Amino acid sequence: MHLKFLAASLIVGTVALAQTKSSDSAEFISIDAPVFVLNHVRVIDGTGAPAKEDQAVVIANGKIQAIGAASSVKIPPDAKQLDRTGYTVIPGIVGMHNHLYYTDSYSLQLAGGKIEEPGLFIAEIPFTAPRLYLAAGVTTMRTTGSLEPYTDLKVKNRIDANQMPGPSIDATAPYLEGAPTFFAQMHELTGADDARRMVDYWAAEGMTSYKAYMHITREELGAAIQQAHAHKLKLTGHLCSVTWPEAIALGIDDFEHGPVFTDTEFVSDKKADACPRGGNETWLKQDINGAQVQELIRNLISHGVAVTSTLPVFELSVPGRPKLQSRTLEAMSAESAQSYLTARARIALDSPVGAMMRKEMDFEVAFAKAGGLLLAGPDPTGNGGVLPGFGDQREIELLVEAGFTPVEAIHIATENGAKFLGRDDQIGTLAPGKQADLVLIKGDPSKSIEDIESVETVFKAGVGYDSKRLIESVRGQVGIR
Picture 1 (cartoon, rainbow, N blue to C red):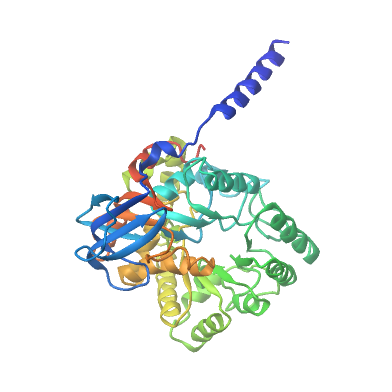
Picture 2 (picture 1 turned 135 degrees about the vertical axis):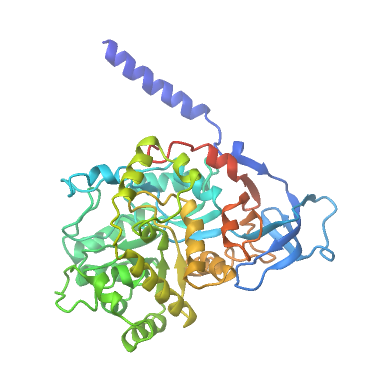
């Protein structure tokens, strides 16, 4: 009887709390005026154009009203004026490989040298992830594969209703994966009919994109693409069993991670619909300027297929990289930090991943320079060293290391993502009439890309959120919730 009373009391208490709870967003809002101006700022507009100095950005009712030289822009008499000399304004980041989950216990699960049944388990972090994404300047994101789909949808809906802080979300359905999968939380497709059923079901539930995974068959992938397109939705893929040219012929919209880590077309003994070993090594032997790679680039561009760069997750397997940051370790739970540091210490000094990452960088530069649509995202998985938001900033820094200029890297992480999502008329660049999704940065990332980490305020539809306050609210909790 006592236990029943306790359970009932907990339920009643939880319901009462839910009924009285106000928005979790309000405490993080630092600027919320109907009309205001960011004056004397440097503007990087997201188009790839050079930065413009001493500008004024006028925001009215959640939209950009005017941008121009501070000496000539007409400022409304009722505007709140904010002098931000020495600061830079960029568009809100559009993260295109961003998850609401995290590999919190990677090293523990791999401690015996193998993954035990039922497979690798990944923790959902619906509280900390949205806050970190927004704090880092991500105002729009694609989840790019779901493990707890109803949690993802709930987070999206709560953010849309201003009940919690976070970016606008393009919610990707659960992975379209074949057998045998490496992950405990993934469904294994049983054929083309099953693939179509999943696409239809999750479209009805509110998902707005799809992701195919490593062991899907060509028949299942083709069925899923066709069904997704019937719903006017897009499908991306982290593939292995299906090669990139095969997937292009089937009508795929996007590829995740780049070819060095996922395209198996050059494996000599590859069997149809099977994920082989050695795809990375075959790509290391390829000349980016050679006929075969250039033909792949032409094939991608002629079919309008995008490629999503996720350099931070691969950097984790390079010895001594990335440079350890206190902000990263402080955000993690104690257990997550220990897991990451343990996994980091196990990386072999002769790991070939550094060479693979450099090859991937070279491909991405060649693809973009040829006219391909390169997208950007962090993929907060791997050994746990990439965190939501911080990883988006690191991706931009690594694009610069790859060979892009800072303004080109920002363009890839903003306007290109908006174009792929079909929202470039609203977000992705800074222009009058567009939604006021923008990031206020202390410093000049056009000269020093590391300044991309010095975010002060993130504006989403004209409402300014305090970055430091958001980060502080999740200290020690990434991996727990």
